[in-house]
Image 1 (cartoon, rainbow, N blue to C red):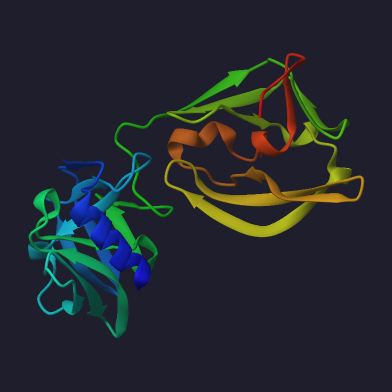
Image 2: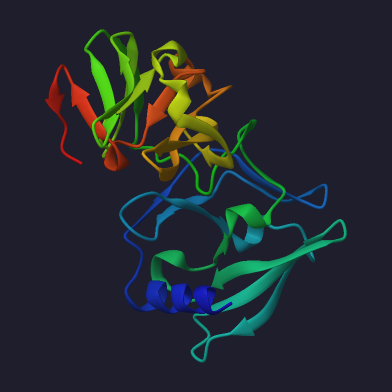
Length: 247
């Protein structure tokens, strides 16, 4: 619980990066029961990169939220949620803490499911309302190399532009030199794109793990990248129309 204690101290002394209200209906499921259902959740940016949902104390069903430990000044406390025979202690609640007063933070993975309106939340945080994902077909040639070995070459691509991040290039499966790729058991979840699967790359006796990913069933906003493969730009050499991209 030390990380939650540290976060509580940081947020009550330094404050969050930003806090905003949202009219979205937000629900949390634990043990087969909705432990909260609210249209008064707050977006809280604990840092500059993406927000979390913080839930008003008044939104919780009676008896599901319980205090298990408090700070000396009683500005925040550690809690637990219990419902349907399941319990999580990944809970941080605030009392008199400025913009976070009477709000509760629950680790996303600690619940069975989060729902924004009727859409299930994917990944470890909600979508940032100021972030946009744009998928655009492009015939610019993309060539991927590692130590001079060509792993892929394609002029039938989809470029994915995501606010504040570098472009990602999604290539057709037929553009791969498959002899260098081996399937990985890794999966991850993105709020904007869905569940990703991965490949490792093996070149000249060197293995680069999880350097290629793809989405079998992406979200609607990222539908154009379905089945296409994307290399982690920072770990390979990427050439766009023959010009090497900076890592």
